[in-house]
Image (tube, rainbow, N blue to C red):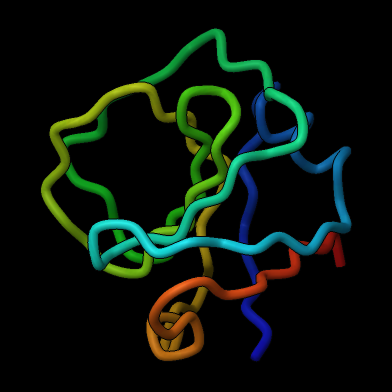
Length: 108
């Protein structure tokens, strides 16, 4: 299944986009997100602690972790940089399934 994301214009996103295309094994975390460690750290000079994280958001955490959220939730953690957002997340949770899943990020 293919999902299209709108990406934000910031240094972290530009560095992430320069790494594409890539396929990564994303692990399950907390029943609401998938994550993976990146091969290299991204610039993350300005991080935030969003009060709410929405399903479909793509973020960098701690400069070297890529996180794709498939459920919305009230958040209490900081260290995030917003990279982008899935434009139409219908079916995202089902497509990601449970456990580890390969995800391909492509600039097209």
